[in-house]
Image (cartoon, rainbow over all chains, first blue to last red; front, side, top):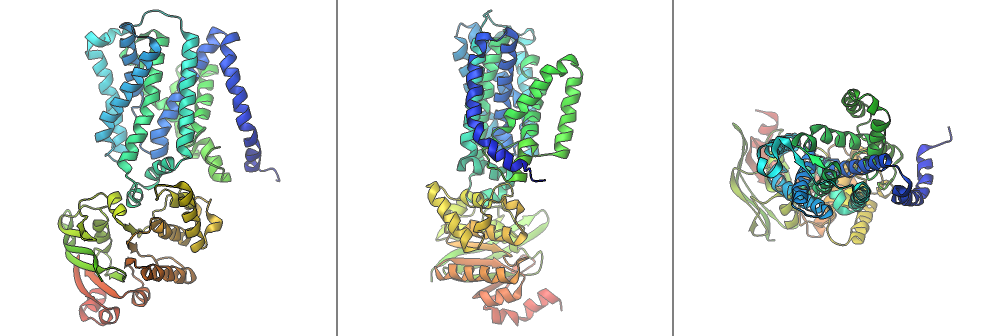
Length: 316
Length: 234
């Protein structure tokens, strides 16, 4: 067989940037003719890209698996929700949500990033549970289990653009990191933390940086989602299944790559909207099945396998 | 020559096992030292204590006149001590070139040039963009060796550099070690291949059961009763 997938990918890579540009323009113009439903679907897709991409920054690059990343989403949602009910403009409230998520990441990361891999994963799982209970408990601030209603406002199109900007920003950030020495150093932590230390890399500091960067977008996106949903409650903004979905998207697309999380988000979210929506109970079963298949058959994910097999540059 | 590394009464215990038991040694700058001893005699643990990967239980380590025990491994590296590992620890999903480039800070272009230079030095320039994990055992060993040289450390600890490396490659590696010594670097190497130790080292330390059994020029050590006993039994 003369046809070589690696060569083909390299040839297509030339059209990647122009294609991406056209796609971006289409997405920017979409709300002009798109339906309300279409705008909301894409808005959620942007949210998933931002979430998956953020999880990739800490877990895909350093190998420190965060099982509680939705905690930052919830933190952002509540911060923004509370501020909006106090009369703060929602874009500012969402940014404040991002800031609070980064602060939370620092408070949690400082002790927990000293833990080795599996213990860190469990600690993050615990963090999410604690925050959910805390959100139910502090009724005066959060409305407790009854939840928090935001003033009504039809801002779908504006939230669409805001989500899109966040998704694009995290992807650009990931590109900058993966193509830099900073990114390579994050990867050495995943590859062999002891050797990284012995080669002069301050692994703890690098893990903290990655963790803070990985918390910002989920916080902002959580704040935007709160505005979009108009109503938040502990179970809706701290669901474990959101973290699991982020993880599956990244593993499926290719952990530690630039476009893997985007690919994973597009494919899985697309499937969810087109197919699984008709079989709501099968959703989680399918997620589980995908995890097992990916881990067993292609632990590097789609892009990871292609990169390794055809020795492609990290930017593909 | 001035003393570059001074280890004093170093003790390291793992539970009930005392892996290193009051070892003292002093290395003069610009020489090649060997560290030998039967399996489990504490050679690698001693390396780990010097480089901060294991925390010592007692004793002191001084480097260029300043204490380094208690520092983190990355701080000790920046003081000027580089090391390789007994079991290869390259970064498998980074390319050979990237394995080298992560080590230095500062100008990226200079790091790239230094990496190229070193890869040419061990004749691996053809494989610069190959994932380190795809290289052969001997090639990975070379990548690990030149990775240490990226920042030009004063003291280099090599943990079994000869193991699993073919003769031709080995001779090149040993020449490289001598060249480093000639440039004033100090080298301490753990090695089981006695021919390598005898041909390369000016002074040899012998460890047994975590204690320093003997110290001296290779010729003397080779005929030392206690050393022969430690290796072969009475």
